[in-house]
Length: 286
Image 1: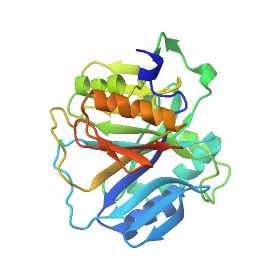
Image 2: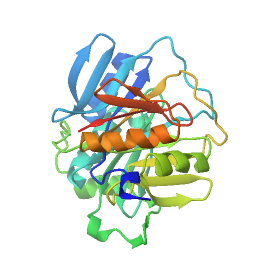
Image 3: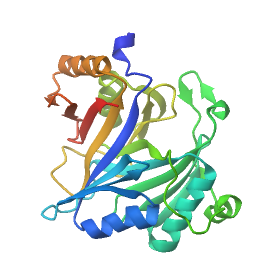
Image 4: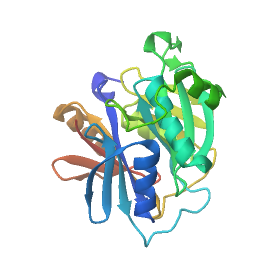
């Protein structure tokens, strides 16, 4: 691949849009549970984030139904915290206010992660990255694992403020993990066309890709969705947003999409297109 075929090292993830049935309940979970701030609210839309940075956008879509079992879509939105202490505060807040939401916790070697489901079943990962200097690489592949992480021990070690206020400045959407129909198509789209670099792969089950040497900005798996076809309109994932450093990067991506005859919707500010399962991707300049 040439330099122009690889997505910019300065690429980052932005706000994930969710289509929701109960706007009030979903807003309360991300605001009161996770600790995000309400940045904007107008009509049927609520924008939540941290320090002015949108992280989750909720769009009220009461006419939609939940997706069928086995459909492609969102596996989880992963919110990255700047420290173990800030992650512990969010963990304490969600666990005490929404005790039934917790679904698990893992040490992934590169990170420590706690998992939840929001009130409408969308996966949420709250995590902290270990320093990059500690990550182990074998060529272009980073060592990741799924080891048990005791959430109570994590709280005991890192919770310094039981009040668990709002997220500190610096929380971001670290990565987005999708449910897809097959890994070969995911690799062809996200790596070969969009230009992300493969950092880990687990046969026909999962693929992880990134920009700039991160462990992963996007994950794709078939654990619940093997063989899934195009998504029908449904509650859940509305849009995945990606930010590039400048217009030249956007132009290079547009050329790669055009070469693969992938339809693009371009309003002059944002480039929108669908992945092979009709998950909408929006790309703009940071």
